[in-house]
Every structure is written in structure tokens, then in C-alpha cells.
Length: 465
Image (cartoon, rainbow, N blue to C red; front, side, top):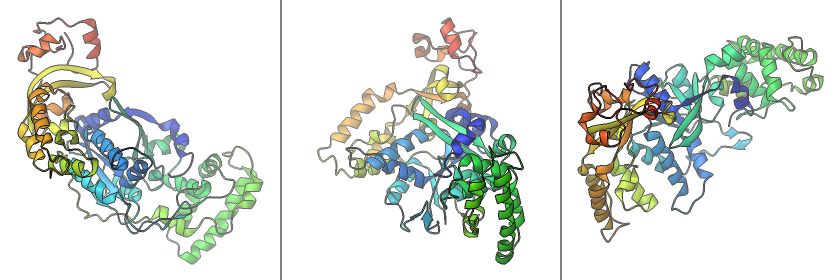
């Protein structure tokens, strides 16, 4: 989606990051927004389209794919805000008619998002346009970044874009791009990016025949994007047509002569191909003045816990899961799932692992009430488990597996999420710390840290001594 070749163009400003590290360092330690979490916007339509490309043997492989991605997102200390396309989105995209009806997965996906505690809204038009406005103007609310594969986010004016590189549980990483870096290092503004989309082709037009991304960038760097939009500013439709006649002369002249030196060479043949109606004013308006959500659109902006009863019913209805604990990865709980229903029983270790960008983390023994699981079990209608096997399986799980649960939680979360201060903790608090030889916090530790242990906690604020 977006303009072909833009991600290759932006390679020079790409910053490879750990999403865990970004969420903690910016949302908690930096806390630039005044909230205790990093707000990230997501295009729900792109998630559903990606899921539809998958196949499987379950009742709904698309929903299974969406569920898995939501579970991985849930493990990050983000405030996710999903935005769905609305009824006023453009009727044509890449030369194809866009159906006016909602995507067939929409209702089920929205129910799933509510189960995970994720906010969602429906934009009046394109979701990507509303998300971009949320990063730039803060309407309807301000977010810190957009998580997307659609390069049109920058054409719509997005400030920060994150693009997933890996969704592995052990390596959830992304690339970070900023509009500031695009301007500083590539010399391209939003107006220039719109011109590139008009020339090289994008979601709303096929572009000019024979004009690729490299030539379009050269023309933008020659100043033709700034000339176009500064000249059109405030003009009526009639006056705009007169201005565009003059602007096209400048465009064709630059292609013939390469007077700016920004092109690889002269392009007289391409100059002859510039249509007399280029660029279409209606396409310019779609990029420059998209329909976005109103300022008063209700969004909670809260870091919510999952609603296990909703997830249990959803999993039973769509996946054939009779066991409630399968609805969430409780074997590997996230900080979000520890907040409302559990307290910390003990700390049994620490680390600074590459999967989180070497953030300082604590190994926690959570005290999870069995009531959380049994109450969620009560939400299941029993249609998939007429023999009552779910109750027995959950009871066995509570007895044998629940006491063994451990969770890695970033140290920066512990004070706010878990309600305790880790700074005064000593290894004698929990015998597992000594038994596993993973405690490295204090000089009073009875187990002398090895060189490997010292290396593992390097970069952490909790140094071995």
C-alpha cells in the first residue's frame, strides 16, 4: 500500500528498534505525553486484509491470525488505538472500486479488541488519514506513533511511523521513521511526498506513465512540490486551473533540461507524456484535505486489562476452545495482565535481554487469584464442552501449572504497575533466587555472581557487585 519504492527511499533514515524498549523508554521513563504509557495507532483494515491472506484448518484462520497478533501486542506496554475505515472513504483505490460495506471481519474483530481491552474507533473516511492527524494535530486525540506498513501515512502528514520487522515472541522489533528526519536528511516535506505520489502513482492514481520513484523524488527536490502547493493555496477552482497551466510548463522544462541538477539525466520523452490535466485537483484534495474524525470522538486512552470473560466466549464461539485459559497466554503473562488481578509474590531474578533492547527486567512470581480463571470459565456457554471437561482441566491447571508461572517485567513498570519498590529487595527474599543463581542485585547476596551473570545484567541499573 502507498507509493511503490518509498520504504526503499526511506532506508537512509530507518532506525531499527525494539518495541519493548521504545514503549518503556518513551512511554514510561521519558513519559513525554504525561501519561504512563506509549500511545500507538493502528489501521484495523490493514490487519484484517493481512489476516485474509492466511489459511488454516481452524474454524476461522483469519480470526486466529488476528487473535495471535493481538496477544503479542497485548504483551507490550502500549495503549493501542485501532481505527477502522469509515463510509466516506474514497470509492476508488488503485483503479478498483472500493466496496461501501464494512469488511466481513469487522464485527468479530471489534469484539476481539474489546476483549483485549484495546480502544477502537471508526473514522469517517480513510483510517490512515485519521491516524496521521492524531500524530500531527492531535485530533481527535494525540498518539505517539502509527504502527503500519502503509507509506501513505507520511503523505497524509504523519509525524512518527513504526513498521514491524519481526513479530516473533522473542524478537518483537520494528523500524522507526520520522517526518523530521525525512525533511532533514532527504529534503522532502509533506508537499513533496504528495507530488511523489501524484507522479509515481499511489492509492488514488496510477501516476504519470514512465515516471518512477527516483525521478519523482528528483522533481520534488528541485522544488516543484513546494511551488505546486504554495501556488494553489487559497485559489479558487478557476484560478487553480490557470496556475496549473503555468506549473506544468515548469515541470516539463525541468524534465527536458535538468536545470536543478536533481535528476539523473534529462527526460524529454517523459516531459512529452505529462497530461494536460495533471495533477488532478480532486486527487490533490484527497491527500491534502482528507476527511478525518472529529475532535470530540470518544477515546478512553486508558491502559486496560483484558476482559477474560469476553475472550473466553469469543474463543469458544470462533475457535472451538472449551478451555478458558487458552484464551490468553497465561503461561507467559504480560505486565498488563498483572495489574488488576494479581500482586507480586516475589522477585527471583533479573536480566537485560536483546529482545527488549537490553532493558533492565525483573523476574516476578505473580500471585494470580484462581477466581479470575474460574469466573471467566463461567462465561463459557458450554456448547463446546458438554461433558464438563473444561472445569476439570482448568482445576488441574490451577493446581499444577499456576504456581509455576513466572513473568519478565521491565523494572520501570514495577513501581507503577506492581505497587512495590524493587530497589530495596535482597536475594534472601525468595529462595529460588539463590537456588537458580540468578540473583545479582546486592553485595549481601549469598551467591557470588559469575562473569556470565555480570554480562547478562550489563546495561541494567541493577549492577552486579
